[in-house]
Length: 354
Image (cartoon, rainbow, N blue to C red; front, side, top):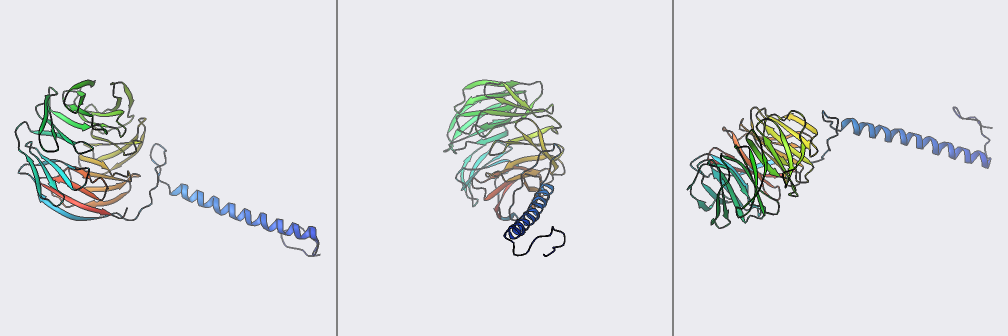
């Protein structure tokens, strides 16, 4: 007989005893494995960022994001309000507060100029395919050009300044929003389809979701609402929206980012639930852009900073190369470059490490 401390007594050289020994060792090893695995799961859970609403934010494992300033060039004599990468990634469209539009190569060579011949510019959009671009004017007009700079249409769209203009993902529709409290849908040639909503407060911005079936509007009364293309309400963001001046969808359409006067970037589900909120800038946030793969968020502020964040709200990089407020941002289609508009110049950073 042999006694093993902490176990029952078993008979050496007995087939039944040998089986029992093996069974004991297997059970003991399995127990240690399960305990170890449970600890790993618990550790992973504790490390996972949790939002104030209790929803877990997805963890994105990535290398450190790096940015290298590649180009800086003066574009206009007036303040540059808007910048947009062409879908090919080798050109950029810029617009000044005076209403002048220019097309540039990525290296800063001027390719086309549309001189100021109308109202001051309030908003600008480039169609997803790059065939058209549209401008919303201070006088309430909507102007559309083709890629060669030929005018397609000029429409008296609103009774007050056009605060926002956006193309649908298929480029067939144009969405405008205005300080007159209306958001309207148009064909790409300027025919009015319908008024989506009429509010008592100015609509500060509006955007299509990635599949083009919904529209988000940010209203000066502090509410952010989603609508279908018939103008029927879909949802309303519930909670503090911070008087949002910016609203945009993530590329997969699952998240909405809003930002405004208080410098806080807020993420929401499309159902209207708050998912994440964090202080991003000192002062007003001017622009928010998701990277094409949806893994990064770029913000631009009145404080002159451009910042990159994970979608869990982790700060990744701050680019402090401007002394003036940043007015707009644009990712290239591949996500390998980021352009910023400030004062009279454009700066382009090459991005890597993600």
